[in-house]
Amino acid sequence: MLKVENPVVKKVNDDLSTTKQDKLKHGFGIIGMKDIALRHGGTLEAGVKNGRFSLVVCLPEKR
Image 1 (cartoon, rainbow, N blue to C red):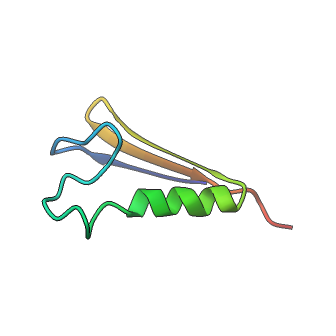
Image 2 (tube, rainbow, N blue to C red):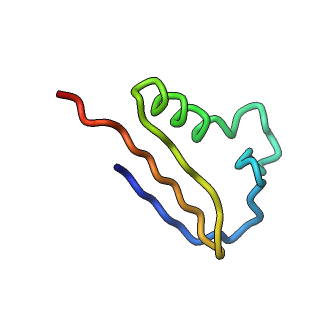
């Protein structure tokens, strides 16, 4: 499991899409990480609550 939290200093879109001007070159990080987690049987949860961005990734143990 990986958990990351950061304070939010700028507006965050509800769908977590990029707020940068050049949208064609930005905003693929969380989508790509979620795809990888799902392909490996895991989960990714991300969002903003109480002025903090939180990302939690869980991957099953490989044996």
